[in-house]
Image: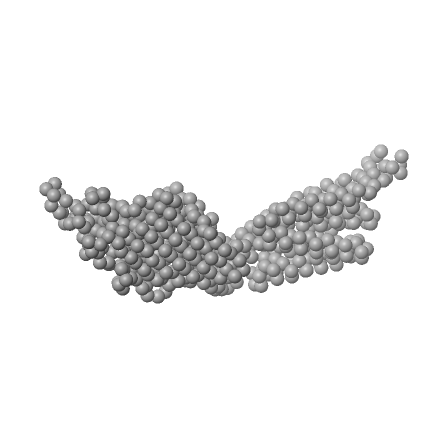
Length: 460
């Protein structure tokens, strides 16, 4: 068989066509990579805008404390107090109860939407003075007149009203600052991946907050406290279980919370919001009831709370859709190739390329339109435009209206199928795998009677 007759052979032509389609599909990976990079760039800009807006409103909030701080003096070799040398005894609460109502707010800057929150925290608890004999101190060493309680707030811009504080039922004055008390933690809360462990957490600290001088009667051992904080923030609301026994409850109408940190809550989450409750015992963490001679309180990884952000934003959905671009291309090329084979028409590889580029442009349309009118509307409009374009073009390719209608119907089913997968979270892999299996089975069924070697059979 000479070269001319070989090229006229049907099976050879099909094989060459399939090889060319495969090469074309491979080259269409280039626009897919470029589109995914474009989505990442737009998402980075969105995150930068979010940080800028949050810097004006308030950043993520980490609430630590309160702690009771009592300065004490040292004794010299003769047992006399040395008033030139002083340090702090830091006492952690026995009980700490926090109740918060969280309300979300949406602000816009240019094309970008920023989710913010405001919360009203009611904090109460109890301190118990330690047995001084157990910590090698005596009553005369303690300077009760300088005692104070301090609470850490990571972003003081978020405080929006006067803080009402009571100590043993009596109102006390609140002053800004922690008087050199530092809360250090081992989680990097400002990273994109929330709660990535930081090996070097020397810079991860809360050095801002408020404090109040309190009255200590050495004859009493138990003291109660309550205070209310009206606090703004963004991205997340976090706490540290500084007490022996800590209970935190946060309620909100926000429907998509993400609970994070070392402790997960019991919670009810639905379309009407969430109600999350944390109960943390002294046995669940490695924190002492008090510490001496160290103004840095290392809470380690003992941080927990709720992340306030859209579970899947427009950019995340567009990125997930972009990952399916090659699937769009392969299945569309498959339909076109099968139509070409069954209808006995010749379609040039260049025409396959134009169809592939039309599918690629769908994703840029999806990204750009979603920034103005949201993902769902953008998906419908972009899919309709793309399917319409390919349908009209296929009328000239196939010269067979029914084949064009079939191609458009399959594209509608494919776009709907991918849309459903992107909306799913827990069952996305299952639905995707079952769908691909069904598509493969349908392809095998449709092609089972195609005579790929019809020319050879006639020759024989």
